[in-house]
Every structure is written in structure tokens, then in C-alpha cells.
Amino acid sequence: MARIYVSALVLYGFCLTPVMLFSPPLSVVVHPGDNVTLQCTDVLKGPGHVAWFKQVNVSEPLCIASMYSSQPYVKHHNGFQPSHMEMFISKRIIVLKITEVDVADSGLYCCGMYNEYFIFTNMTFLMVPGYKDSDKEPEKCPEGEDDEPITYPFPLVDILGVVTAVLLIVILILVLKIIQDAKRQNTERDSQRQLQN
Image (cartoon, rainbow, N blue to C red; front, side):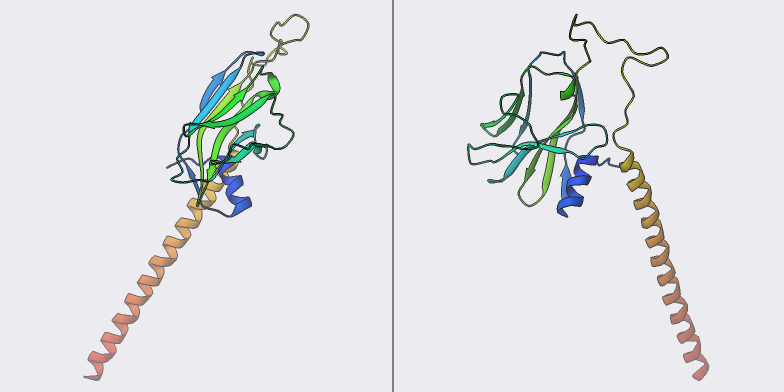
């Protein structure tokens, strides 16, 4: 069974537009202060809207920056700054450059395109381990906790998957019942015709 991710579901719910998801998420670990470049290929057959999104845990995905693929103008959204996150297109490659990453940059990033459908590609979990400002040593977790918390960012997908499966089963049962009733009625008609003859 194919897995659909929360960002696609949320955008689908808001826009009521068909959604396509191409690639499963990758995980990338970088250190604070590093520069990161995320990229994806523009798969639209013509000009369309392209954007980069960020999602943290199970929150609503936020649009970082967007642009029309045939125009050089980029618009940043939700407080994301062009000096920290730069978006551009070069030879059908949609690029998001994040300079001097910090812990707040951790999250799920995805490239989204819209023409007739929303298409999400290059979903990447960017993980930036936390550091203390004074000595740049890794922060220690309280005893009994792992160094990296276990996060499951897609519980809604599981719930929606179960609901969908149950609804499909109910629909299948109803269709089978309708077919069975139709056959029974045809059999009754045939037996009544035979009695009349």
C-alpha cells in the first residue's frame, strides 16, 4: 500500500486539488553553521507554480518560498528570510539554499509544484543536532532519554488509512449485497414466469 504524507494531505485538504507524491523522504544530518542545498527537478510539462515547504513534527506545512517557474521573482512566506533560505531555478532544477543552519531549521522539507495537480518531490528530513552556544558541545539529554527523540510525524496518515480501508470494505459489502439482491430478484421473476406458463 502506498504511503501518503501529511504535507500532501494537508495541502490537498486546503486546496481540494488532486495530489501526487513521487519520492519517499530521505534523512540528512548536518551540523549547526553548515550550508545545505536541497534541490529537485521541475517535472511540470510547462510553466507552473513551484515552492519549497517545511513541516515540523505534525504541524501544518509552511511555505518557505514560491515562484512561477518561468519568472525570476521569488516570494518568501511565513517569516522565512531570503538571506537565510534562498530559492531559485537553474536549468529546470529548483534549488533551496539554507545558509548557516541551526536547530530551528530541523524538519521535513519538500519541493512542491502545481499546474493541474500538486506534485511533491524530494522530501527530506533535515536534522540539525542541538548545541550549547557557549562551548558548542552537544546538549546532554536527561537520564533515560535517547540522544535523538523518536518522532513519528505521520500519525494522521495511519488514521486516514484505516478509515479509508474501512470505508472501502463497507462499499464493497454494499455492492456485493446489491448484486446479490439483484440476482435474487431475477431468480424470483424467472420462477414466477415458469409458474405462469
